[in-house]
Length: 250
Image (tube, rainbow, N blue to C red; front, side, top):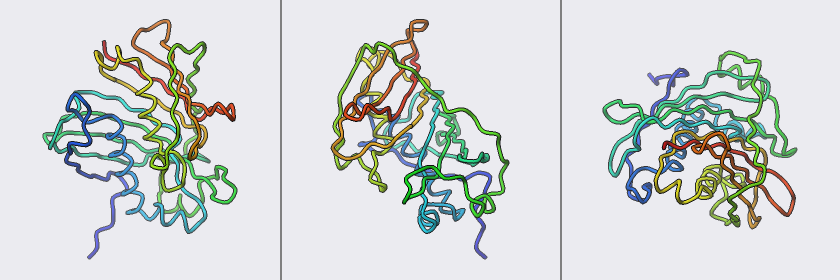
């Protein structure tokens, strides 16, 4: 008899490979985010609310917000990590999902909270969570939360990126993990080389496409040397596509 997939918690394991490491021989934050999203996608497929089912209804999932808290040193080469994920509820436009990343001996490495949105393929606009999807996932209905915004006034650091074809996802938009890489790349070298990322909050606001120029601007918050705010924009369109906040351990 086929076992029904658990709505409560879904688990997946990953063994870390050499190309997933940073210069310090530890798993990169971007690759960790790939692990989280791969596990979420697997769980959605198992629950019959994944890419295939949504595509048949003319909609697709996009990540709207991500908050990651790193609790201990990132694992290294050949280490095995386990990702746990579970959906927690809906509001009218968003689905909410939590994550936990642990080592083989159950030591907690990181936690994450996410908000996901459904977009209508033809209209290219957000669509309310449909009834058929909520019926398949009998979860609490939330009042909803405000979209996070992190302002950057008088940016001190700025980097320019050009969207390559390899930066695109299956929806022909820039992959959100690529944006995470750009944000972390924009952090000053004296921070990245001497300090450890503790927390990252991102709000994705618009899509970016092939061959567009993306500017990442960053500024340190005056009241804390460990906190930076970031914004990604398309200068040709004067359009903001994402904002973020990073916090570093001194």
